[in-house]
Image (cartoon, rainbow, N blue to C red; front, side):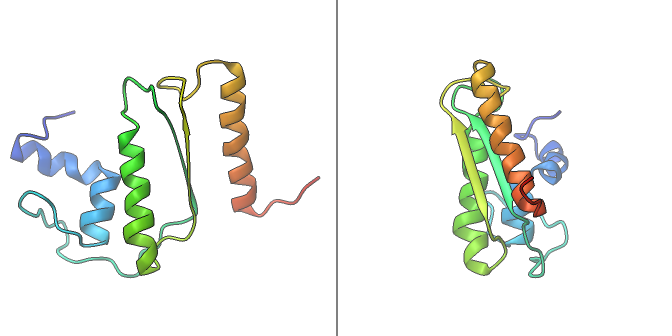
Length: 126
């Protein structure tokens, strides 16, 4: 934990933010504040694997805006550079931090997740 408003804590926290690492360290997009250089250069050989993001509109712990921003960065900034192929996004309009409000929604979320995994691994139908 830490306070991103304190420069000395932000420089540590930033290294654990996939969004900031993607946008600023890999894609070399400028930061709003003074740039923090971890390596000083973009990583042109990096490529995002096929990815599925799931979230819930009503998550009261992790705002769905975080997933939305990451998906947007991958689609609008990484894909045009050939650094991301397939990006899937599913947002349940109900639910909470676990992504589902009831067992039916939970089953749907896990069915999507396992279908994505099966497709990604190239597993055949039985």
